[in-house]
Image 1 (cartoon, one colour):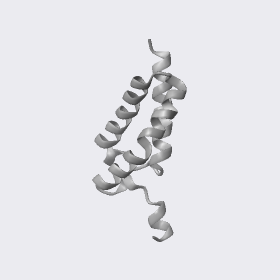
Image 2 (image 1 turned 30 degrees about the horizontal axis):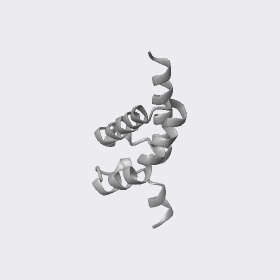
Image 3 (image 1 turned 30 degrees about the vertical axis):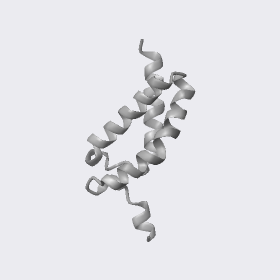
Image 4 (image 1 turned 90 degrees about the horizontal axis):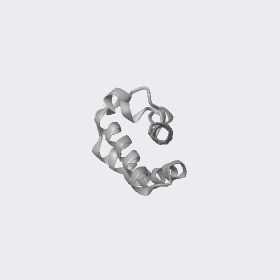
Length: 88
């Protein structure tokens, strides 16, 4: 794979079920563990992570400015976790 293809955002292409499945399989559990460092409730952490994957699924084409899926997901899970802690 050449360097320009490597750096191309996957969001700039049409939705790819295989890519989404790979990202989900690789990041779901680590993101849940990461979320639990803030939330300390497994069910709630899983809900937050699932919501971010649903958002990713539904907004794939609108996320063209995102360069790194992993960083995007970790940041969004952190932000949602912190929001959950602030909002009663």
